[in-house]
Image (cartoon, rainbow, N blue to C red; front, side):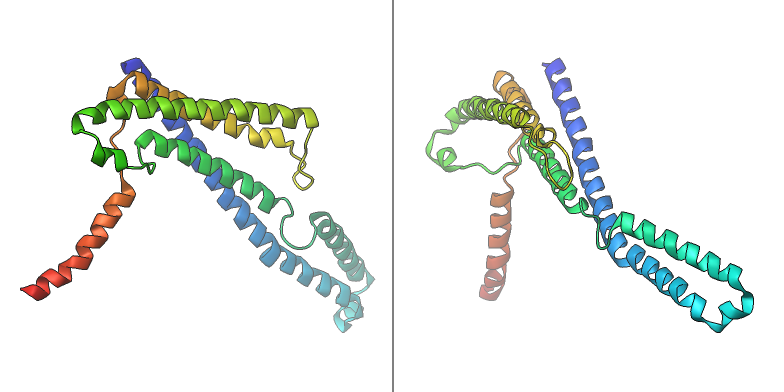
Length: 231
């Protein structure tokens, strides 16, 4: 069991870093996109205006033709470079940012599953005898595992179909199957994790019922003023 636990911890560690890198790249892409649109384009536009107007200034006539030649060279080089970059933001940045957001969110979903922080219905917990709850949790892990493994199977079929159709995003020019490969991995990872929980119940993380805790906290804050008023 220790060996399985070590494998699961390593898997979670890698997914944590992968998700963090995705969100880091997402942030850098958005910064680059805004900087290109709001800073670089404006600076280059100002350089073009200055170099274009320079030959008609009195300072250019005083200095001589060599300065005009330099200004026109700078103007031509800046114009060509700006044409190569394109006006506005980075065209492919927004689409690539969506990919990184998708990957980061899916890695986060796997980590949430590893910590037991996913929401789940608690109706059976209130109805069934408490002696049966440990067995119910084991059954839950097996059901969840088979569900995710089935999704992994479907996602593999989906990716293979995408490869056969040779689908390419027209903006990023990235083959879509490279983006979609995250789905088989995440579903397989979550299916394997819950399968291990079903085989080794001691590894099942304690439930983090965030919604229930938030509701109880809200009720406590709501009734606290009333209790003080009654005093």
